[in-house]
Length: 292
Image 1 (cartoon, rainbow, N blue to C red):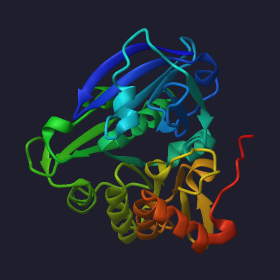
Image 2: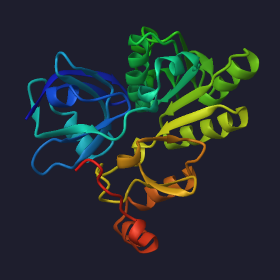
Image 3: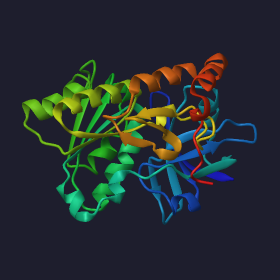
């Protein structure tokens, strides 16, 4: 059983929880995810790791209550326990594999949207603790649903806030903010890491491809089972078929077929859609579990 040690309301029905999970905390890296099962009958919910403390043995997750399972999850209180908390799963961020000299040459811009701000924070904090400076954009529709502003400000060199309605910070979306920094302010970046809603990541990648900036995205939003067995997170990356849960969740954003991924995501929500995908994709429908 995995005890909830902290619970905090952030915004827009989004909750932060610290979970006691020493084995997971001792092995994880930024970019990875966990699968949470609240009880014996509960659904498996994949959540990207927001933070971890190896000494305390804790993992921080951020949950937005948008369906039955996540609504039940956020009803749990401090002292309650989840039945299963499996991880770390997936591959760590590519940044963790770069040498010190390689990281020093990088000028990284993180672009965070919605609950994607949580896994962005994990990577930004890891870089800060290892002595590397990065810039961060946090985008939201309106000020009321902005999360992690103060936490991010403490871990990055420059934090840029933008809202679609102009209620806080720069008026515009994340792409408008990137254009402002690169085209109007003359900022130069070697790498963008974008994590957030699928549509946001798609348009960020379209822009950064035009600007010639390498871009990494997290395909966590399309994961369901999290082990490569269900086929939900199958996606086309260049000329290869990949699965977000076992090959990712991070990929070269300029190679991801976002239109196909979003269409599959919509189809997978119905029984008829899932059956049709099985027929259409044949032997490539399911992935393979690299973790077993």
